[in-house]
Length: 170
Image (cartoon, rainbow, N blue to C red; front, top):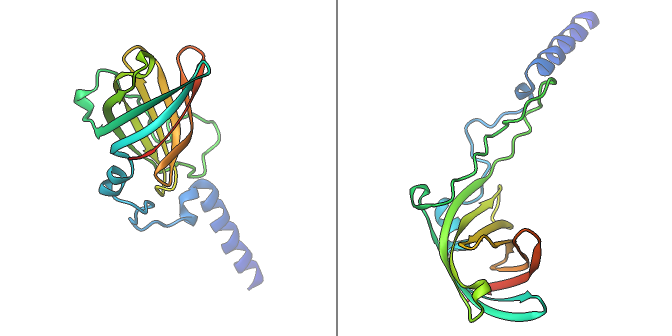
């Protein structure tokens, strides 16, 4: 009797090693706690901010709207889920994320932060933290994390870091 139980445990253990998904069950349920409308509400619209570039404080306004992939002049990054190669069977370690292309207009008196922008926002299971990546036409990139309707740790860079920025909802 005990030998049968150990045999059953052993068979299940081998099956779990062969297919790590056996121990997990999603039953078609979504991992996300938000819908597309929630993501739009969290990110799109008018933002007011200030950047520190070369020791100068530069106030700016940013208006973001959703872009279609066809309207983007920058080719979207291809990010396959679980696209890496391994000679060891992976254990279902994919991250669920949402990616939304955005376009907009950055307005300031400083020409370094003025003009059209395009990029994307990315969120994982919740909207507690949304990653923002925007590219100006001259190649400058603004990156940061939106949390609680504000972004406080933004970076402005080109080939090298140029400064920092923060922004909040208007």
